[in-house]
Image (cartoon, rainbow over all chains, first blue to last red; front, side):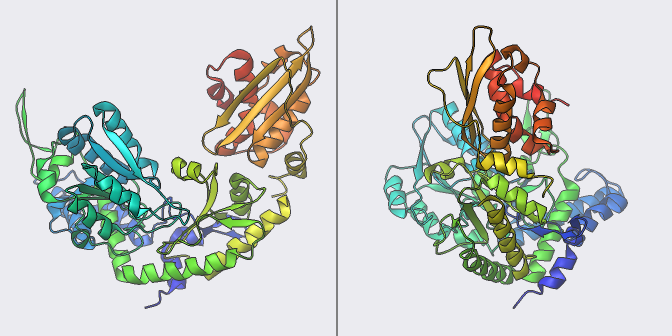
Length: 408
Length: 132
C-alpha cells in the first residue's frame, strides 16, 4: 500500500513551519532524530495535564492510571518487536544506555581477561566505546569484522573471527552512515553455531522496517524512541529473559528492589530490576503512541516508501556535478545517503543547504573509524523517513546545485 | 546566504593569500577541530623586536575556518606577538563580518585557537575564546 505522504506531512506540526520567512523546512536528518507527530506530542501533554503521578507503588487513582499507561507502553513495544514477554523489555534512556547496561552488567559478570568481543568497522561510537571501556577495565580483546569497498560487512573475516571462540558479537543492524542493512539473522545463526551471544544495535532498523527479535533469535537488541517518531530520553534494551535474569542490576535505587535492609538488598523481578529511580513516564507513553502511529501506517509500507525515495535520490544525485555518494552500490540499504562534493567541505554543504531550508547532517556521524577507513574526514548525509517525498529530494538536488555554483 | 558566505569569505577560501608553510620558521603549531576534522597549522616569522613579519597557515577545513585563518594571518602581520594575546572571538568575527552560531564559531576560531595555544600554552584557550 502506498503511503499518503501529503496526509502524513500534516501529522507532523514541525513540517509546516518555515525555517525562515518564506522557506519551508525540508527535513533530511531523521537518522539523527525523527520528527514527532501530534499524537505523540499530545499524549505527553495530556498525561501531564490529567494523569501525572509516580508509578508502581502509589495506591491513588492517578498513580494507578500512570502505572497502567507506562506498562501499556511496554506491552506495545514487546508486541512491536515480537518479544515473547514484557519481562524482556527494559526501559533505558536510549540505545546507547542499553549497550552500556549490557557491558556493565553482563560484561562485568561474565567476561574475563583475554576474552574476545567481535565488533565491526561500521559501528556507531555507541557500540564501540562501551566495549573499549570494558576491555580496558577487564583486559578483553576486541576484534572487528571489516567493511569492504562496497560498504558491506566482509563475512569471511566474520567466519574467521568466530573460530577464535568470542564471547560476544555486537553489530549494527543498519549503518547510520552507509545505510547498509546487515544480514542479522544469518550472522546470529553463525554466532550461535559458535556458541557466542549477539547484541544488535537496532537504532536505525526498528524505526524503518519490521523487526522480529524472536525470529532473529537475537540475545540483546537495543533501540531509541526518538529515532522512531517518539520522544527523546527513552530507549529499550530487549534481552532474552534467561540472560536478563542472570545479570546483576545496573543502577541501584528505588523501583529496582524487592526488599532493602541497611546493608543489603534483594533485586526486583524483571524488567524492573534494571529500572532504578523514577523513569521517563511521559516519554514511555509518548513512545507507545509513536508505535501506534507507525503500526497504523504499517512498517512494510514505510520500508517500501523509503526504498523508493532512496532509489530516486540515488538516481537524481548522479546528475549533481562533483558529487560522489559514499558506497552507492550497497545491495540491501535503508534511507541513508552519505556523500561528498569535491572541493566543498561538508560543513559548507550543510550551511548552504540550510539557507534553502534543507536540513542535512555534516561530519563523521559518530562513526569516525569508518570515515578514517575510507580516508574521509567528514561527509554530508541526507536521510529519509516516512514523511519525505520526491519533492524533498528534488529540493535537495537543487540546493546541491546551488552549492556547486557558489564554490565551484 | 549573501550574509553568511559573503563574497569575501568565499574569495578567501578559494584563493587564500596566506596559505603555505615557512621553513625555517620561528614558530609553528597545529591543532584540529575533532568535530569536523578541520586541521590548521600556523607558521610565523618574527624580527628581533618580536614583531610578526610573516604569517601563513596550512591544513584543510570548511570555508569559514579557512577564510578566517587567511584573514587572521593578514591581520597579524606587522603586529607585535604580544598583541595576539589580546585577540578575542570579536576580533575574528569582525574580520569575517558575520554572525555565527555556536557550532560554526568553533570553525571560525580554530586558527586563533592554534595561534594562542601555540604562543601561550594550551590551557583553556577554547573555553576562554568561547566565553561570552
